[in-house]
Length: 337
Image 1 (spheres, rainbow, N blue to C red):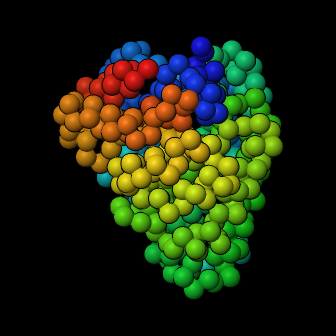
Image 2: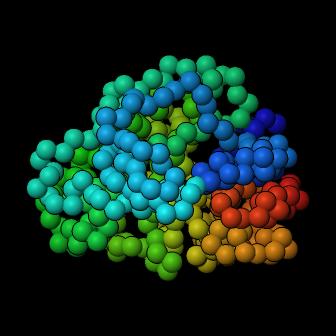
């Protein structure tokens, strides 16, 4: 069974030979711990991989170097401050902190206008892994980066006209990006938004359903129309919107399982959506013993795994996580095959 077949069988509940592997890692791991990263990747190769043969257009605004201590500006004009090497930092200056700037604000259309995906299909044809790409699509987070989190939450509470206008501007951009990828031979496309606090959604589920859910449904529809699998990531406790993600057609969800009732998620949603990881990166991966890591994997397996599929063995390697804990994740998952 090829990696591509394994992932598709997992997503369609068609009895893969084992759970597919997918290692995420923060930029600092690739930059400062490259030898360790290569060792783990050689021992436990990913079943999902990003194809080559593409680039987005060159940004007119971006400057500085992301993930290095200091300041950088992203493609949308948000100014980030990085206090620790190897992480993305925090937005400290927002282009739309004052709504008066909205009339003259331009999205970075050059990213899409000048994108070149001409080599993607050839790259996909040479892969036996599942061809998987991420996107810029993250409407809630992008609105925070542009407006500021506190400002945005107040805007949503009061329903100011400008917040709807900004949402719709971004949605046009995001739909075009999704159509761009849907026209290629990739197998799966992901988008994201970090929706949860440690205990609940950051806004009411009803408001989420009214304001944001229709956007996500459009992305799913665009991708499904061209036969792509839809992947979605969100940090925090998002239990309240799991049924909605299933309803709109998300095939695989990456969420912080250990912020939620893992056993309850399994009881309610196993067989309805693929759980795309994860293992606790707040406590267990950075601070736990290998025995505790293995126990965490066994807990996820017990609650979510089924021989028909529905689980991807995924974890995120933080800059200070011991290598042996990452190895323990995939070794323990291997025992479930």
